[in-house]
Length: 265
Ligand SMILES: O=C(O)CCC(=O)C(=O)O
Ligand SMILES: [Fe+2]
Image (cartoon, rainbow, N blue to C red; front, side):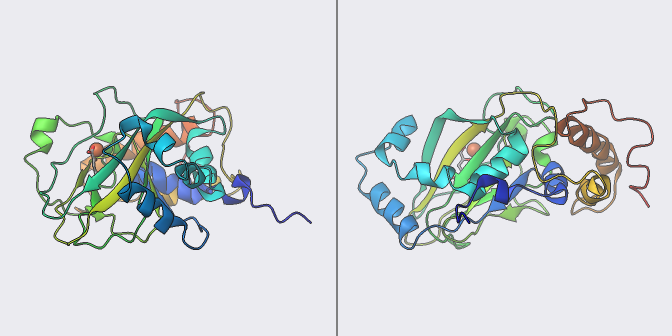
């Protein structure tokens, strides 16, 4: 019997896809060999300046992060099996004594309510709250906002701090609001940001889908409400989430009458 661990063993469940649709992020904690994350940190420390998009050539071991079956399984689930790595990538070093970044969405304002691009943010060492973790705001991937306005926001109720253990890969919808926070520690914080693209419209679920129970499982994620409690914004967003779920299952964007009818019960 083969011992090979395959990406298909790590596909997300209906419930996890529903949660991604609602929250706009999914965390993967791949098991890397002993010393693997430390080797990446060492390679980063020895770099001669920031390599920009050349970081993958400069630290080829990073291929093993994004080729890990647990990472591939999650990316395939969210972007389809034929997803690809984008040419844009960056090492984000957050040095001791840094200030917080403003809330922002990456890229330019070409936004939509589907999932065509995600970030895969890999942290090669434990990140404590003092070390300037990335902070994300769950659910904001469906809320386009001007950066000048976002810059005036400080702490938000419900924000989620990516104080994570070494090796974590945070997969986030490209439009999710996020920011680097101030580093109050003595150590630089590293984060590798790689982008991944969907290459085709979904024609079938690309995750571990059970048609019998899928709608109820997805509804668990879809009907989540934000930290402010129930308000009309969430009700409006549920419609977009249902539409995204339906699109991801390969059945187009028009949600049939009667789908998710039990969602509010
Ligand atoms: O360093 C981080 O945690 C986030 C950096 C970031 O989002 C950016 O520079 O676009
Ligand atoms: Fe960013």
